[in-house]
Every structure is written in structure tokens, then in C-alpha cells.
Length: 204
Image (cartoon, rainbow, N blue to C red):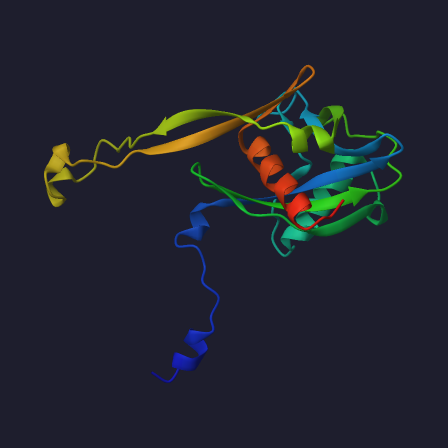
């Protein structure tokens, strides 16, 4: 028990965390004479993953960088801006997907933004008033998650075998609709969370 004291102060980690892909995104605010807007990207149709989706700037965590560094780097690359234009306010709440990924959002302000973006990754920049999200509740739709086991699953090792009563889960899918734009899924979930944090901490 010589390491008991060390163990008592360790920070817990996710079990099987290595099976999850980690991403970091920036939820950017833009201050204008008309008010505060939240900035989104419409992903290029040329991309393999989620073409045409509306999302925050961000991407996959690279080795030897922090989550905040990842969010800033990806935002710089996608919006063609400089690091000094990004003011990080702080971290949002973590989104854990049932599809083996974890997203770490950061709230920030982009200064002196001139609507630039990389056409390799981004088709369009979308700005939506922050007050829209404050005043609009997202629509909720339910998705059912079920177990689909591999053909070689050892049913004989578990009680009741193939008749085992597997648990099923529900996954709530959120939607915001603003003009012609639809923000949904994990981006909508993060928007809802971040707006609540903005108001809870009176950030703007």
C-alpha cells in the first residue's frame, strides 16, 4: 500500500478512453454594431466526412498539443486568421458521443474578422445572432440505440445466451432552424450547452 497516498489524489480517467477519437472546437463569438453573433462554418462538399454540414471550426487532436491549442490551430487554418485574433474565454462542457468520439468545445471571441475562410474545407461562413439561441428552444427528436453483435459473439458465455435481455438506449437529437440554415446533432447540443454557460456566467 506504499502508493495509497498517490492513488488517493489521482485524477480519474475514462475507462477505454483510447477507443474514443478526441476533437476540439471553438465556439466563436463575433462582436458587431448590430450585436453579438455566433459563427459557424458550412463544410465543403469536397470533404469526405460530413460534407455540407454546419459546424464550429475545429478538428482532431494531434499528438503533443493541448485541446485548446487544437481548437485554436484548426480555427486559424479554416478561417485564415492569426492567433492574436482569437481570445479564448474558457472551456465549455465536454460532449461524449455514443459513436466513439469526445468533443471539447472552447468559447472564444474572434477579433477583426473579415469573412475569410479556406475553400478547401469551408463552403460558407454563417453568422447567427446569439439572442436567437437565447430565445429559441431547439427541437428534440429521439433516436434508439441498439446492440448489434458480431457473428462470433460467445453467447454461450453469458446468462440466457442469445436471449439475453440487452439494454437499449435513447439518443436525443437536437435541431435549430435559422432562416435557410439547419444546425443539428452534436453541434446543436454544444450550442445549447454553451449558450446556457454564457448566461449562467454573464459572459456577454
